[in-house]
Length: 138
Image (cartoon, rainbow, N blue to C red; front, side, top):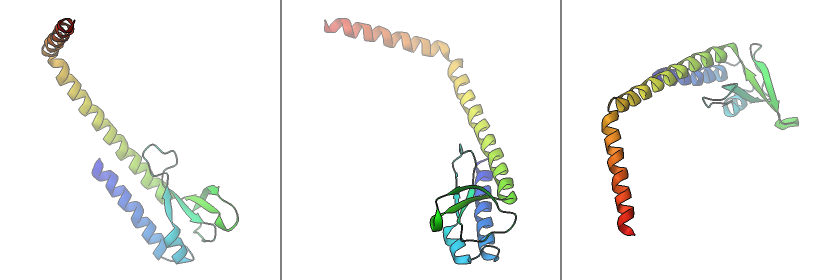
């Protein structure tokens, strides 16, 4: 699952390089230097939106999801079908990773619970020593 997550992140960067170098985004240098993925955390709602200044012209398959700023500093947040597909793969890999973690924790707790009598005896001995230690100080 972790490898799949890294693969998708590499594919997102490769998509960025492809779009910046094939001439569909103009001016190229502005697009390359200002292209930024936002909402990259696992718990983000709209993952991997593309943030570009308004001055960059984009292909038709880019659609505006949000805007930020005013005037010359305005940036648009775009989505594309390719990025959405990659984000869907990323979410599936994240879900597999979470399920793996949950299964691992289940095993840890099951192992702990299988030795309940040992832990119960250790707890009782510790509480007895604590009580005796408190009485000895009085």
